[in-house]
Image (cartoon, rainbow, N blue to C red; front, side):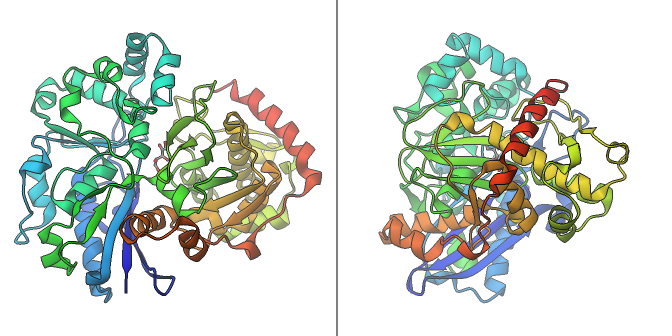
Length: 520
Ligand code: XUL
């Protein structure tokens, strides 16, 4: 029975999903939450505490340990990993791992000790900056200046020099930690790092995730010499050539065969970013269907007919793992903001749905929230600064139902406003991620986007995208067949827009933009 494993190393957890292409079934879908299961890393939300709110780093050994832990759990759950023919997957985008030796020179891992102990001495930098980091304003300006302006950076790489992108992060490392920089022989993204662990040798970064670095020449599929020079001297030698997403980067290392029962020779396909992987996992890798992913960050993305850049500079263009390009707008106040409201008012996730369906109305009686509980990427809000506007009770934090609707309406309005540049009509929007089963949230999205909103049968679309890409590359399945069988949208749960709300949300969008000027 041909089975394929997809992994997703995201901000807060590592997930594994196995599909069986004979039966058309998902064999297993399991996750390890870093905060809960690996508390020794002191990263309850997946990143390390820091007095400087702009600095967000994670311990890469936490990701390594999670891999051992999750594969052991699959084994303990009776999953026969020897049936897996191919593996692919995804990582949170932009995060980077710094090694003092190329993994090509390591050979196989020893099954005698845990993987984390073997990786520890290879790290030239103890922590990894992740996508939530916003400490690189100076470096972005320097890169843009060296390139002759932000438009030039966007024309080559698909995005302006962007705070969380890996190039500016690398430049900051080069400027602030000379000794560690000198000791660094190889730099990986989270995605290529996990693929490298699996093969026991250095796996190339794929075009999809590589586009989130401000280093890749999108048209050429090669590191841009000008961007490399503008970022840090000698950087080109620390990066392996980028590869297409459907490249087999190696075979599974003996360590995993001996420890977890994989078959020797199991192929590993290049890993990509979590958003490009979700595009495939949602069956949306051709233009015409937009995707909203509700995770730690919320993202809106769609396959693109032609690469187009965001004139306001917030959105990005990445490689589409199924070929061509995709757009992406990323909002850091996703579930982080929803969880803040839930915590503040003691609301369950069901309370959110009933607050929206039963206790409040579209437009929220004029109550509005600027939902910035952490610094925001889109639009740029540098300091956490939630603002409440409306009735006395709402502003005083005494109206739980209005607060629940307010956070969801504000997020939806902002997503709509900041995805207009993509220029693709969004008649159908597929929704994935932890919050995608919340009827109240889907209702607001349908009304704000004036589009049919449909959740996907499998919530974990990024890991599913990994499994589908492995099946397509190694097993040779057709995309259409794989999408029909594994990524059917839940039509029954689809929510139709109510046309009567169109003008309400048009007014709200105008007010929202007005209010935004106060914080951005
Ligand atoms: C996308 C982005 C986030 C991360 C974490 O540009 O920064 O969505 O990929 O999921």
